[in-house]
Image 1 (cartoon, helix red, strand yellow):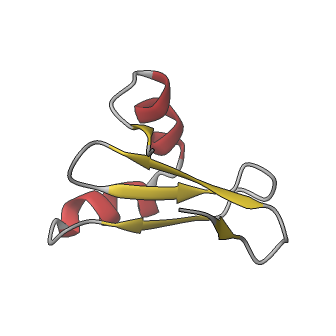
Image 2 (cartoon, rainbow, N blue to C red):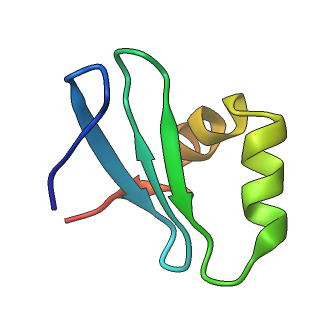
Image 3 (tube, one colour):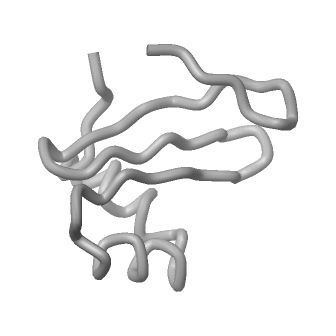
Length: 64
């Protein structure tokens, strides 16, 4: 799966098996799919650094 950000760079997809997050590391934009879990989208919208923390702790892993 390949997506392109509005800035022209690539979105990198991550998942925890339930949620999907697409991150552009060039401009910082992200998009997410919560699978009917509104608290996940609210949490990452209020604190986007949470995405990086979830990636670093390997809760969110690259989608294949």
